Image 1 (tube, rainbow over the protein chains, first blue to last red):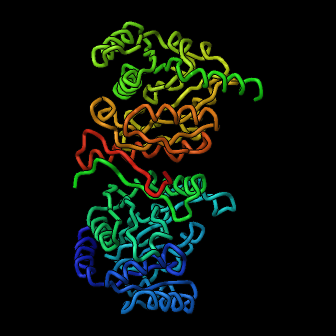
Image 2: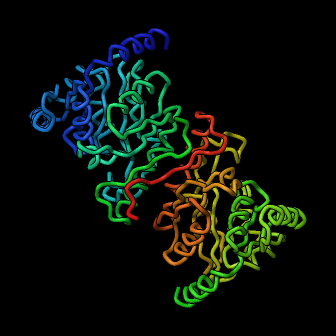
Image 3: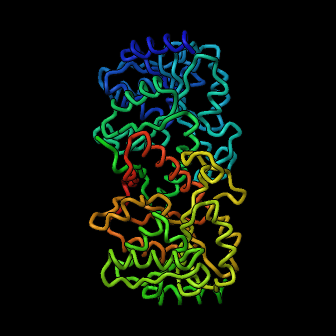
Length: 239
Length: 239
């Protein structure tokens, strides 16, 4: 832990000005985060399996956020260019995408798992979840990343629709789980998005408690007919 | 379904004025609900394994809520006297308590599972959960109740401390899951507690998505040092 950890601390300190890669940044939720981080002035690299799709998404961000520092690249290249790598691909592509970028990851980098094991991955509904051998999608990702890379669980329950409404706050809490220093670095990212509050979710395994919330919220969106997406707020937290 | 269902509908309609039994009503959360329902003018029967403990708890409610219509009884008798039976015992006593009252249950009654499979049940922490063969504590209870009895999942995440602060609203949403008519009857109970909002959680199996929230909240209470208990609110719900 020692050497990798100090490299990580260094990189996250520098990372305040370093690039954020969003793999699957061509999808609704990933593109929403890209827009928000670009609007906050951060350098964003959109990653996709197909570089040309990533570049098209980057142009979309540029069009909506004047002056955005955003580029597109294939997933391995996007990974190599960022301090924080956000995995925003559907659950069925989480393991595969992680394996694809494994050789581009280096000690000290932070990988953020946004995935939820929705049963939609096997053609069943998005209102139910699958059991994951490792306990959660985030732990599955952690089991596939090289030593020294820090996996953090976050952003699962932010509505893509609300992320993309750039003039409005997203009005949602997200629970961030992982080792203390990488967790703090990801909690700091949340502060870049108006109306998005980071809540300290403790160790990574707590993703098991957080990921099911997204399936619950998808069910509520359907039952209450709220296509914009229902969020959560924790009450009673100290300021 | 037909005959039982119409009996149930009848009993829940009458049930607006009928008794609510709270098994495990001598515990913190159960006693908190007893206080709130008694304060709202409802007839409450506190159940316990030991009738004298239930009677002592009923006296406690009477002392705090002048004019409360509350009595105490052994669990089977409390069950027989109520239209809605709330199971508020620790997870390790859920199956046993359900079996104990099985012969007192009748078609049309509603049984509410408040249980969460916290790992505390096996001497591990309350910030983690156990896997339940049936999928959730609520479905475990449903597997043990006679045909015609309607099991509903609710109230898992209401802070006992906030329930017992009778002068303050509890400031929390609860997700209620089960078949439509019994679910509506339990959602109506929530309206009796100031600051408690019922959210339609769909079918009973969704308790699998709701129960883990309590372990998450217990962890947050510890990390943020909020002994009074952190709650949740869903944002973006229609009024």
